[in-house]
Image 1: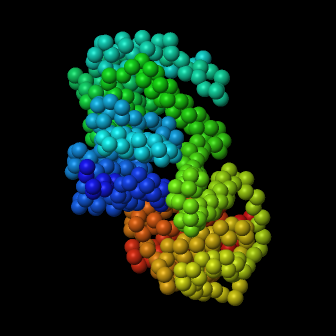
Image 2: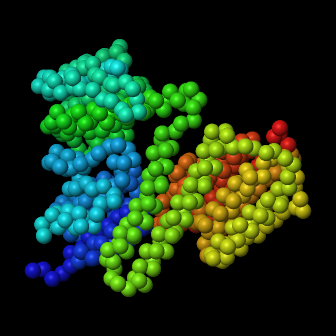
Image 3: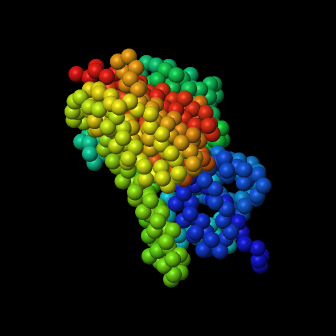
Length: 131
Length: 376
C-alpha cells in the first residue's frame, strides 16, 4: 500500500463551498489543495500534479471548469477530473459525460450537481481513483 | 396545438430517417401553457441546402451535424448568428472537440447531442430546446408588450440566491452529522460563515427589491425640496461601523447646505452605494474623500477611495446587473452585484450622469452629477 496521502486539487469560487469540499475531502483521508480562481488553479497545476481534480464550472468565466479541464488533461492526461456545477439548474443544459464521445470534448470524467451528498462524492472519487 | 418547424441537417440518410421516426409523433407540453408543441420535420443533406431552406422557410429548430460534405455545420451556425435568424440550434456530431464546442457555444448553439444517440436522448434534448425557444420568444413578446417580466433576471437571481442556501445547508449538514467531532468549538467558524452568508442574502433581497421597483417604474417617488448635505451625513453615519473595522477614514468636504429637488430615498441609494463600495474595496488604513459641491445648476458628488481600483476591462462591466469583478483581490468582499446597476438606474431617473476614473491598486473615483431643478 502506498502510505502517501493522495492529493486532490479543488477549485471553486464560492468560498464556503470550497471550504466544505476541502473539509470532506480531508475527512475522506486525502490531502486537499483548495484554490478560488481559474488563474490560481492554473498556477498550482504547473508545479503540482494532483491525483484527482474537482472543478466548479462557473468561476471567472462561465466555462472556467471546461478550460481548466482542458489544460489539466493537456498537462496530465491521466488525472481524473470531476466537474461540480449548478449549471444545470441555471441554464437547463445538462452536461453528462457518460460515454467516450462526450468525454472527448468535455474533458472531465464525471459531472456532478452541486449539493451532492458527501458519501456520494466519496464514492465518485474512489471510483475515479480506482480505490 | 402549435407546430414548430424542425430542420434536420445531416448527410447520413439513416440519421435523418431515424430522427424523423423518433419525432414524428412526439409532442412537448408545458404545465403552464395550454398548447402542445408538435414538430414538422424538414431535412437537408448538406449545409448549402440547409441555408436555402433557412432563407425561405421560417425554421424554429435546427438539428445540425458538423461534418457535412460541403460547408461545415459550424458555418451554417455562424450564418444563423450573423443573420440573427430566430431559431434554436442543437449540434449533433460525433467529431466534437473542445474548440468546436466553444466555437459553437459562442455562436449561440443551445446544446450538443453526441452521436450515437438513442431516441430517448433525442426526445429529451428536443424537449429542452423547445422549452428554451418558447421561453426566449415569450420573453421577447413580453418585452415588446412592455411587460416587465425578466426571465433572465430571475434565473440569474435564483442562482445568486441558491449559492448561499447551498453554503449554509452544507455547513448545517456537517454539524448535524457531527463530522468535525463533538467539540462545539470546531464548528464556530462554520456558524460564523453561515451567518455571514445569510446576512449577504438579506442584502441581496433588499437590493433586488429596490431594483425591481425602480425597474418596473413602480417605485413611488416623492419629489420635494431637500438638503443634500443632511442625507450625505446620514449616509456617512450608516457606513461608519464598517469603516471603523477597516480603519478607513471618511473625509467629507461639503458646503453648509445644498438644496435640490429630488427624492430623498433615491439620493440615499446613490450615497450608500458610492460610500459602501469605497469602503469595502479600500485598503486597511485607507481614506475616502467624499465631496459635494454645486456647479452651474447641478449637484456634483465625488467619492474617491484608495482601494484596489480597476483596470479598463473591469470598468466596462461595472454597471451591469449581477456582475461582480471576481479576482483574488475581491474574493473576500461580499456583494450582490446589483448595487451599481441600481445606482445607475436611479441616476438615470434623475437625468444625471456618473463617471468613473480608476487605476488598479491606486483607487477609484466616482463622480455623479444631477441637475438641481429639472425634476418636476
